[in-house]
Image 1 (spheres, rainbow, N blue to C red):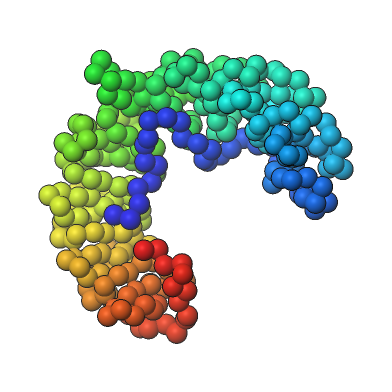
Image 2 (image 1 turned 60 degrees about the vertical axis):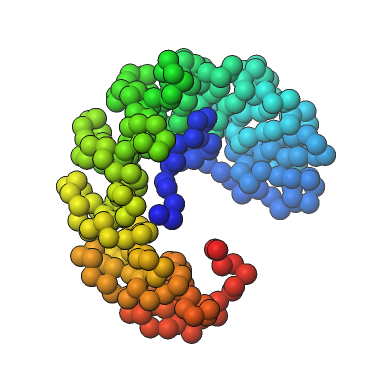
Length: 324
């Protein structure tokens, strides 16, 4: 499988969706000539700029408003506060440059749904955009809030992380009992039970009920109504009724894109539709999605593009950007 969405790693997920910044204004071109480095976003009338080794903030005319004293400086959020860092400790300042949250946190992540993951002494929680602790620092792992819920994790007595979901009031929505858990993509999240090589994967709905109990050796998110699953070294797809829709016949598979998916059998690649009909034969030595209804393929040492009808497209291929 080419990639996994939202793969969990122990630690905080950094800066992803629904960041609660104020509306960005264009940064005047003159600032890029005046300073060594300039943030892309001017908010609350201020933009972070770097001079030498330190960051500060200037207005749109380049007038210094917050001195160059920080190692890191983020964009001001919609409440008028910005995360700053010095000597690997983080806090918040207001628009006057006053520290409203002391430089004591090991990490203050970018906000999502007005809540920022924070870390101190290996414990994690959430802070609101004004710097008030909204959810206590009681977890060994926290993710970002998406659609009102966030993944959190706590280590058990054997130091195995157990994951579940909480809401913005720190109420447990799905118990912390899974060894692997992804954010919901649509109606379902991928869950895993068991440690490492023995782990089995399934699918959970937002009510915490299984669509598919953990039974696959690997599993990915639903895309276009189909999710790739793996068992005993072979890949296929399930549909949203939880049943196997395309048999476990393939050595590798890709997500469906506009009704078609790349599959691999043995050492050859081709393309199937959502009824498992081979619309492009398994005859290529390499294949990848190239956009504009094209596939990038390799055959007998030659690299070129084909369209969805397996017809060669006369577009030049930049071999310097090949993904392998």
